[in-house]
Image (tube, rainbow, N blue to C red; front, side):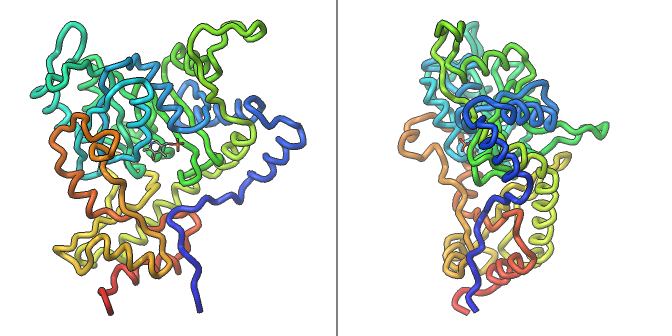
Length: 391
Ligand SMILES: *Cc1c(COP(=O)(O)O)cnc(C)c1O
């Protein structure tokens, strides 16, 4: 018997996707306006508890617009984690700014202690703003990424940002459905605590629209400007007058239709991701040399991706050996991203004491996490992880 490939993360489109898509075709509302776009914005805002949401073409565009509206200008600097998918780093360059790279904590997220240490040791607080002494440039914003869906340690970061007058953009593209649990039992969704929160509906995210993004903010004026900039900055739509450099960053009604149908299933998807994570944990808990990255205390992760730390010192596999073994046996596994501060376009940018991220870069493996993952498939993956090289 030859088993099929177990994908890393495949979308599941068994809800109202087809029905809503048919509605688009039948009504001929297929482009960058239409009832599903409005509905997707409203329902996403309501889901995360934000006053408004502005749909856009993808998560990277959402980050780009958020950087513009955060006042990040040419030659400014933006603090980011080095352990992230590269999209937010590229967005910083789109506005002519430079990234400043930070290390991660044990949840793979930007480490607030090192951030503070960097500001105290390497920066100067002047009238014109916070200046990075190493480069002489002004730091204007921080992008916090909720890596693999685990909420970052945001409160101390926001406190630091307030003190030094920096904007906070949450890259919540991986963490839709993840929350902070307040002391009074209230939940706050990732993306709603910073000045801006950005979401993505790319095919590999927890829900998809084929492609798409969303910006949330508590500022009505910022939301209005986000809408303005994503629609070519029209000041007079009839006479084609424009008051700024705008972008064609709108989402189409077709994409939004899929998004709306997916959003209806999000809570169930999160629950399944969490349940499957626990199954992996349960069967792997006594396996030497492997451990899974868990959610931080006082937070609920959507467990978008499962990060398996493979320690060759304690176990029988190195990360790359195990990855090859899995891939040769039709299990799609992938290494965590190569660190951004070492990538070709960003090699010469400032990076502050990157240590933990270096270790995780070589040891983290992403293992299958699709919502459609079956118990038999989890079994197959785990058996391979628990097996020994060449035997
Ligand atoms: C997916 C992702 C993005 C970009 O989203 P797109 O919709 O693909 O543009 C940005 N940041 C991170 C961390 C991501 O994982």
